[in-house]
Length: 326
Image (cartoon, rainbow, N blue to C red):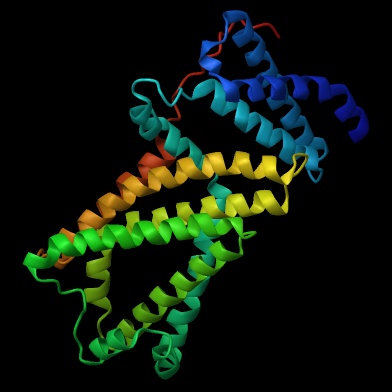
């Protein structure tokens, strides 16, 4: 079967499912009749089957992206609860957010790569030529490093204020990374790379001046959560920008709207994680706990975080009746 024959044969099913989803925007799919739910389930299975065929036979055609987006929209409409429904927040964080994370792992990985490239380049530069690296770091931090002191030594009475400041600042950076994606990804790319360069420069200079151990001891407790959420926010921004660059078979407006719905949910989960990271950074990271305890605490948060993101929500069963017609 040629591509044209495939599209002509399957298009009615795709259009019918899209019509269901568009009507669902004006109401609630959950209020549909059993017959309508059966039909919706049937259409969803047909589209996912067509997506598998398209990926196998026409991997470079735009219909693959179109079907992937259509299937994702259908999955969200079928499996996710109404915003006004009881327990929605609990369901979102127990399964919805981790599922969104995994389904957008490509964009999140790209955000991680952009940050890491900037971090690695400036870290290496600081080791090779510290004088040049110092020009990229804030002057007050450079002076503190030269004095063999850490700016992370926060008096206990100021930790409440510091935690509040950290939360606000991290949420601001996350929102910037997310919202800047609408500039065809350019803004998000800049923010991710800039933060990688900034942190890489400071880390490299700390290494040169013998402060690597206290730096990573401070960063470890909160770093896993904080950096991961920045990557998720950056991935959300990249997703919106990519929708404008490659809208597949949809209009740019429609593609951006669909991408933004997912991106907003991702950033909502990020805010909660950043609040947790801010509390840890304000109270645990600068505390007098032994370095081994801090590092162990950080490792534990990393294990819990990644277990949550990669494992939660996988066992959820479909709500579509299993006797729906094929």
